[in-house]
Length: 259
Image (cartoon, rainbow, N blue to C red):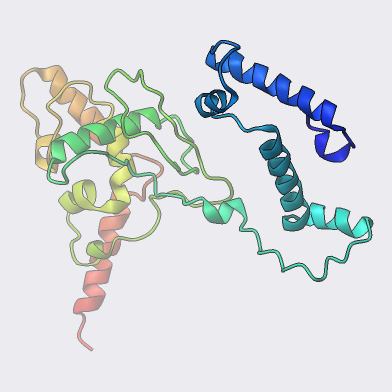
């Protein structure tokens, strides 16, 4: 049937091909052999022989005219390809793909639900904590459950893309306090999420004060909080907190110096 557009056939051969196509329609629909052909076609929704031939010819013509390889074939066959419209430039795939900064993408959540969003963010950090620090997360499924049984899809960007923790926070220039750097500064979001993901029991800290000064009972829970805080402060992917505080004080001193 695929060679029908390219071979000469007579009426008898066309009728035989039609019968084969009708048998396929009866097999698909399960209709009896005495079903009228118009009813068979309306129930099967399959193309007839003429429609299949037209579709095949249209596909081949489009391939020859709309692709560089097809136009080269036409040129070898002696056709003038200069009269054809110019082909549009193809966009490389690396310019189509949008790289995110690795932050979680929570779905069906209200922005005011900070605790719920933090819970999902820690699950993301736990799922992607094994990735090298020099690579960026392109996408992570926001529907990752607590037991980690769903299909978590994530990948990393290629090339020498810098990690998302580099750069400066504009707020740090005027607020050089530890609470801002450890809990609010966006530069430290990834290491903060990685550290909070190590805390196995809730409720999780909601501020730097509750993180550094947890409730004394039970003692092992406070130790877990302190270990996570030390892990956050010593994260190699983030600028040292001490250097950031010192640099911020230098900026404040320069801004406050008389001119």
